[in-house]
Image 1 (cartoon, rainbow, N blue to C red):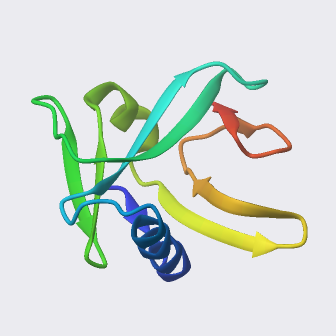
Image 2 (image 1 turned 45 degrees about the horizontal axis):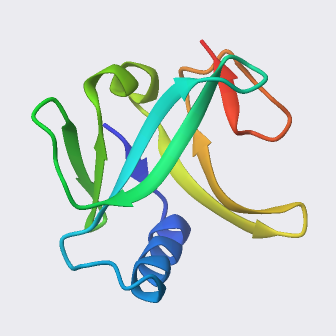
Length: 108
């Protein structure tokens, strides 16, 4: 399962409203090759569920990922940090053995 913190939920809902996302929009998370640690996180709003997608709902927010990315993201929590050191969504990923300093890439 992939979960979302209360703070990340609030921010995601605010962004969806600001960007005029349709009511059926959800958060799509994924993993792609790249970044200084080998794998990078992807995060976007989407409205199309593909046949091989894994679909989760936490705190009323739908979170979707493709099957391959799910292998790297199982157990991950989506968090939001708005402090002085940086602002944005972060992934708390128990599968990551190493992360880069910016937190946008990881390795397993």
